[in-house]
Image 1 (cartoon, rainbow, N blue to C red):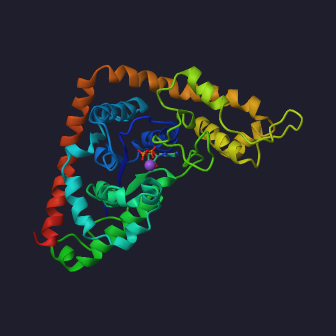
Image 2 (cartoon, rainbow, N blue to C red):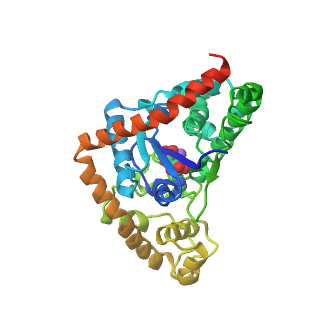
Image 3 (tube, rainbow, N blue to C red):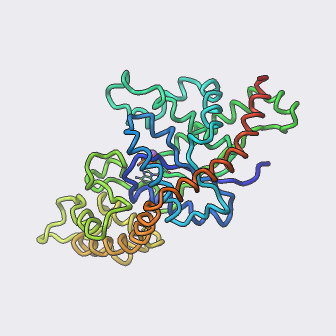
Length: 340
Ligand code: ADP
Ligand code: NA
């Protein structure tokens, strides 16, 4: 049996958005009451695609500020930057040798992110899921809160843990680790907004890398910008004054209703019961007010924190030291299991 522990990460790639908040940050906070939590700024994942070094430094501090502003208690839990703990990259190499090409070939995120020009994608982008498995398993984390977009990667993490445990079962037992060295980490994916969609194209998820700024609500957007983006959110052509129609059973409405539900802490059904008869023109201002109410305190606190980069860097240095104290011995045991 493994001590319950939560691990999750956010990439420092700029443009932290409402999807990151609802699918990740806002879920990380309450878990602090039940688990020991480790929250990572995953900069090694960010460099799987080209990053400007100056912007990367700023984005590392921005994600750290977001963790703090959202309410992560860095005295009782750990917030740190991935590249400051070498154990992640070490274990990822071992997992590159455990995982099979066929497993990685099935990953849909690589196909989406690499696009048509797969020959020019970095090897790191392809191997991204083995690094993610290392991030989680180097702490022998048991629970991983993520959005639905990461579900497939988490299944791969379990496959890697199972294969390692199985391939080396005799050695693991002989060295006194019982019948499994790694736990099977479980996803914590629940609630109405596990997949927040783009405000411009309902078939794509809201993402940092979408070239259209109107596709997402950024955590740092001011009230006016939030209201404008929601007002401009794409709606289907059925919303004509001549043909008034409610919110139920319409794909774009579904996304906005889901966002409203998550922000207000209600079930979608409850939101529909209250607002389902409204048209977009009436519902959107309510949603904008709610989004501003929830996001503006976080944006204010992020601005305050970012004015003091020395403080943020201190939080990361302290977090890295405490993370390394857990991860180092795990990698040492893995090497011993492998005969190194
Ligand atoms: P992005 O995909 O925008 O680059 P990350 O990969 O850094 O963001 O993801 C950080 C966390 O935010 C992950 O837990 C991921 O599942 C979650 N997340 C990202 N986009 C969304 C979204 N559109 N809806 C819900 N959760 C999301
Ligand atoms: Na993602």
